[in-house]
Image 1: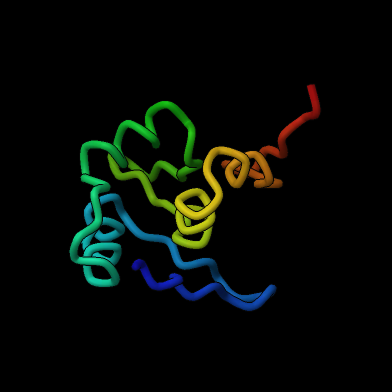
Image 2: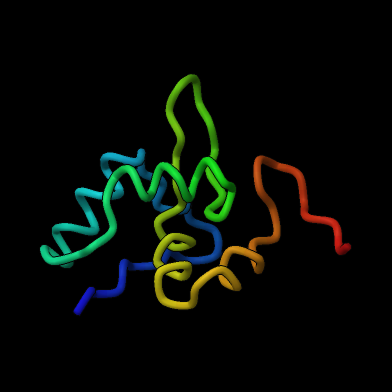
Length: 90
């Protein structure tokens, strides 16, 4: 069973990781994880998981990724701000 990735205090910087680092951290917590680097890249490309793009690299908030893996797509919908722009209710 995957261990919960630690969350941060309200004022602290969120734990941001590149895609390869995120997969390495998930595999360290759960060596039998079925999530692959390619699958995570697809989730980021489809914007199912929000990310911050810096140059060619996508950074993922590990707390959001953990919530997504535990709760599915509804977890990513609860994100207030992505790339500095807040989500507008439809």
